[in-house]
Amino acid sequence: MTMSIEVLTADEESIGYPGINLTKESTPIVVQALLGVTGLVEQSPRAQGTGRMPVAEWSGTGAQMQPVTVFLWSEAPAPPEFPNPEDGE
Amino acid sequence: MSTIFDNDILIHHIGTPGLPGDGFTAPEAATLRNDVDTLLSRPIITELDAIPDVDAASPVDGDTLVFDGATQTWRPGAAGGTISQVRQSWGANPTVVDATAIRTLPGLSVIINGPEPTVAYLQPSFGGTGSATNVARSDHSHTTPSMFRPEFGPTGYMSGGSRVLATTNVALANGVAYRVDAALKMQVRGGDPGPCYYTQTVEIDGNARTSPGGTAGKWAVQGVPRDSDWSHSRIITGTGGTIPISASIAYHSGGGIYPDFGEIVITLTPNK
Image 1 (tube, rainbow over the protein chains, first blue to last red):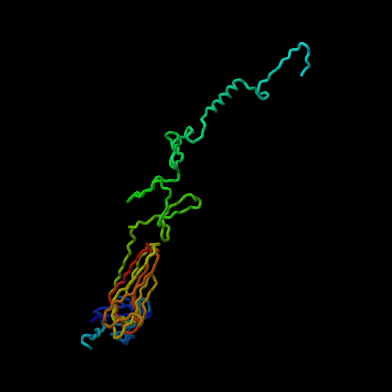
Image 2: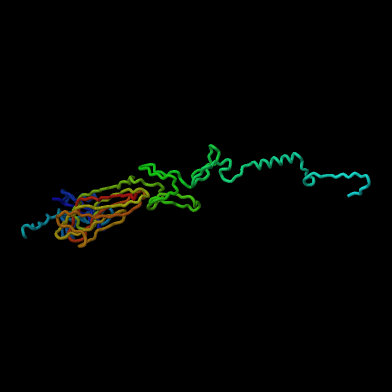
């Protein structure tokens, strides 16, 4: 399943990485290697303003020493099925 | 008179003509006669042609005297103030003989210079502003606009904040004004049920243009890729350095979004 990492900084900068091999275990390694995020502490996942619940959530410190929140997201749900007008429904 | 006595002889002295003390001698009289003869022998001038160095026996209307160096005489010739020929030396070669005036049509101006009121300067009617003194040819070419297309790929689910999609630096030549166009072209999917609102921003050299947010702005549908464009334009005079151009997308409200692949189409059109 395609996953994606979202790193949100305190000043609302968003950085995203999609990938099929992202897991709860690999995410801290990826964000540290790519973004220099350190001090990651896993948090209990909380539903965000979009209504979606992340697979996992961490708090940490960004390369600029600003607080960051890291989310691991699963791929979007399948598109909703649209009614076929020819079905008369 | 002195006293006369008997047997005196009376002697009369007859003086020479002329002023007292200025005798009129015989040689002088001869010279005078020669001078008179010379004067009386000169021709009687009653018309120009009678002057010895003028040969104007048959003048015609409009003639004036023109000196002929070969014969060293003044002879009838065309009056001054005309140009013998004005000719276009290309194409159909329209030619005006003995032109008495030169007038200009739109595109060519007559300039009168104050200190020289009798001199007419001809100058092309330059359009626009500037200081160039040469006239452009109709088949001249302009500098081809430069194009840049920094691309970006999908960046995964977005639940908040603003995400830079692509950024690049472009060089502008010093002193040249450019119209800088930057168009963000991308696909966006909704990530959750319901409308997924977002905004897009294109920033050129620190000046940003952002799409409206919320119900008046852009939104995506869950799982459905949609083409989504936004653009910005500026007029910038180059300094010889580079300017940054970037595009970003921001979550606004509703469901989350998936910024998928896209590009910024950047066009630099020099104002020349």
